[in-house]
Amino acid sequence: MVQKAILFDAARCTACRACQVACKNWNEREIETTTNRGTFQNPPDLSTKTVLVMEFREVGDNGTLRWLYTRRACMHCGDAACIKVCPTGALYRHPSGFVAVDAGKCSGCGYCQEFCPFHLPRIDANRASGMGRVAKCTACTDPGLNRIDNQDVPACVKTCPTVALAYGDRNDLVAAGKARVAELKSQGFSKAYLYGENEVGGTGTLYVLDDSPSIYGLVEDPKVPATAIAWQDVIKPLGYTAVGLVGLGLLLNVLVARARIVQDKEGT
Image 1 (cartoon, rainbow, N blue to C red):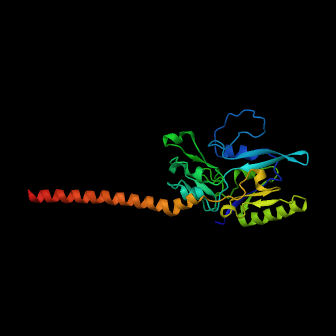
Image 2 (cartoon, one colour; image 1 turned 60 degrees about the horizontal axis):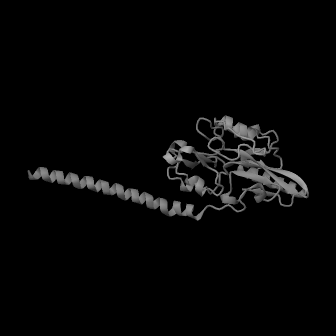
Image 3 (cartoon, rainbow, N blue to C red; image 1 turned 135 degrees about the vertical axis):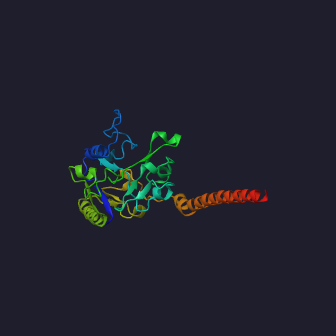
C-alpha cells in the first residue's frame, strides 16, 4: 500500500470542530464534561476520550486580533519514538503508514507518551494499577472501525466543510501542500510553511501554516529522544537477552533436577 497521509490547511480552517465531533462519534469515544474557561477551545486537552482536539490561539497582529487554529492529534511520525519504545508491540505501523494501536496489548507503561516528541498519546486513569490503556488518533485504522482498509477516508476528513483537511497519497499531499504554501507567500504570508514534510522522518499528518510552527503551538524542530534510540538499539535487546538467559537458567535447573531423579532411581 502506498503511504497515506492527512493534510491540514490551517489557513482554511474555521474551527467549526466538525472533525472533532466526527472523530469521537466514529471511534465511539465517551463524552467529556467541560466547563467555560474563557476560550472557545473545549475540552482543554487530549485524553483517552478525546484523541483529536482543535486548539484556539489569540495572536496580536498589527493592533488587531487574529485567531489561529491547530489540529492537535497524533502526528504519525515516520520515525516514531512510540513504536521504538513500546515493550509489548501495542503500537505498530499500519500498511498505510499511520501509527496504529492494538490496545489489548498495552500494559499502560506510558513510555509512548514520555518519549513522543509531541507528548500526544494518552494513558487512561488506571495506569497506576498497571491496567491502563493507550489512546490516540489512529487515522481510523482501528480493527472493526477501519475506514482506510475499506477504501474510505478518515472520519475527520470526510466531515470537514471547508476542505481544510485532505487525505491521500503522501507524495501527492506534499506536492499540494507546497503549492498551497507558495500561494500563501504570494499573498503576503512570508513565514508560510509546510510542517511535517521532513520533521521526525516525515509525518503522516502534514500542516500548511501561514506563520511559524511555534506560533501554532508546534515543536519547531522535533527529534526522537536519544534515550528512545538507545531503548530500541541497546536496552530492548539486553532485556530480551536477560529474559532468554533466565529462561535458559530455568531450563537447565529442570534438566539438572530430572537428571538427579534418574540417578536416584538408578541408585536404588
